[in-house]
Amino acid sequence: MELGGRMLWTFLSGMGRRRGSWGRAFSSWQPRLPLVGLSSAREQVSHWTAVFEKRGIPEARESSEYIVAHVLGAKTFQSLRPVLWTQPLTAWQLQCIQELSSRRLQRMPVQYVLGEWDFHGLSLKMAPPVFIPRPETEELVGWVLEEVTQRPCARGTQGGPLILEVGCGSGAISLSLLSQLPKSHVIAVDKAEAAICLTCENAQRLQLQDRIQIIPFDVTLEGSWTHLLPWGPMDLVVSNPPYVFHRDMEELAPEILSYEDPVALDGGEEGMGIITHILALAPRLLKDSGSIFLEVDPRHPELVDSWLQSRPDLPLRLVAVRRDLCGRPRFLHIRRSRPQRGCPVGAWPGPQPARGPG
Image (tube, rainbow, N blue to C red; front, side, top):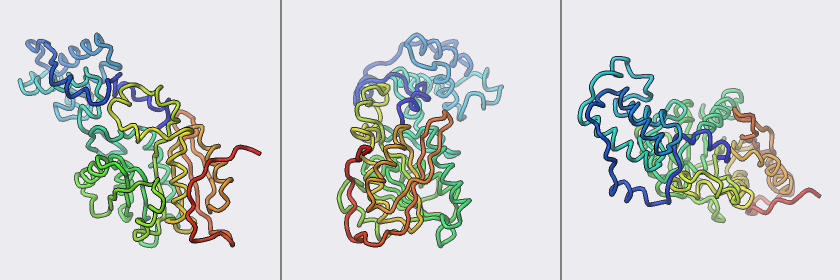
């Protein structure tokens, strides 16, 4: 996810601490905050809003509202029945609110504090250090759904597409597509064990496990594509890969680097490290006229197009760029064409540095 886009949800995270310290800090520090007389949901929101503001927690009211609503079994404070706003809370509810708020005071992202978050209408379990899905990635899912609906060839021979997601994280993209495309099947891959486990758990929670294969897989290993051949050929490849420029990593909000796996963020020198591996892998696995959909940094469309032009051995072309809701070029649609005569079918198309103009 791009630097500016991440700031859209800063209130969900705060400023953070160094990786691994929050557990010790939370276990050794408990806020000595009086609960007597703060017996209603509304009073708890006001109390913790003031505490968060005093401690410099961004979007203090939103944080406190999410926590109180979660303890009361709702997604948002506004969705609670008004009678619950002033109804006395139990001692257990008050204790839960205090414990979750204590974690928020340690700058833990709200998604991790609550242990769940909604994405494209699905409730997904969240757990550190697995990458937290961002709102703009829902736009990527929407574009893929449009493509499948409008192009019959993208639906596959079984009535639904066979989709490969590279870097599944929590399973947000894969499971959203499965829920909207009842005849589809997904191969979801990630090299992080925590991501593989979380995607499995979310698939089971949503009862989608029968249509998804979740495979440990490192796209950067030469020849790794052979492990996916038995599952193909694919109709679509979808990915929200690590694409932050390495030099921009230090500019990310501290809480992002403190809690989320930096490997899921850092795309290398020009943010293209994993992207080029995906593009090199895709022709081996895609059907003719199959598609690749990527979320990228706004600087990447030109870089990707230049890289593809420098690789005539790859039967891929950039066919569309779509902007996000903030107007930034964020999503790419790349299509596989039939291999040109004379291209060696058995050669490994490994990634190479992009060539500059001229």
